[in-house]
Image 1 (spheres, rainbow, N blue to C red):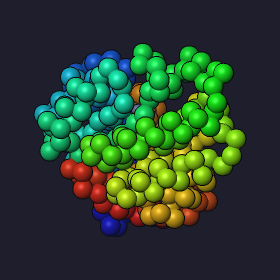
Image 2: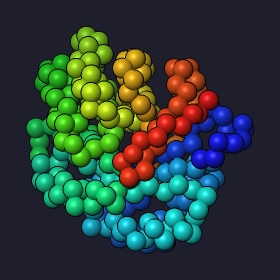
Image 3: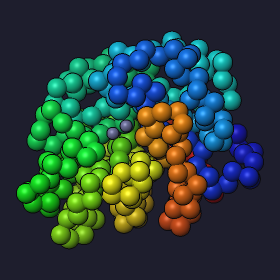
Length: 271
Ligand SMILES: [Zn+2]
Ligand SMILES: [Zn+2]
């Protein structure tokens, strides 16, 4: 973004670093698939977007298509990314793919979508809620954050997605979530990773931003940088609820977010 960014978009997030052009299946990258995302970005005053399809659909990712898209749309920064998760079935090949293409990728999101069941993402709505039935919620939270630390330790991610996804169905721990997450946030800070402010939580049963305000405050106090994200699975969902996110960012006193180019982090002012 140029330094003379017009004041009309002050306080408005200008980036979306969590998007799924392929949705939930392999759809090879093409102008027909990707161009609508750029149009959508322009309509919403976004100047920086990252494609972060799930690693299990890496076969559809085409770096040459991204290059052509950049050439056709020089006014929007388009980052090549992936969302790497802890899928017990697919994440082995996913990790190898990330390693093989590290230098072509700008940005890797790390996610925890799986707990004990290898065949079902716990964040499936509504089916995943069954994984919480009859279990001690504090223990599930502790287990989830342990897995987040494992992902953070992988050395293959730049940013952690939906940091407190474990709340998705509305289950709450008995005490302060901040205490449960403290060790993990310290670890994220030590590793120099970012976390995202994701509006996706607002469209899920929990109806709350990822992460919660108290976790954002804690992350801020530890110097952890933020990206802004919608986790859009369609171009019409890009930057969803960003007006609400802008209010939240202002209320929490966040004045900058980060963007990534070839894994190199840069900080940009948003206020
Ligand atoms: Zn995810
Ligand atoms: Zn996602």
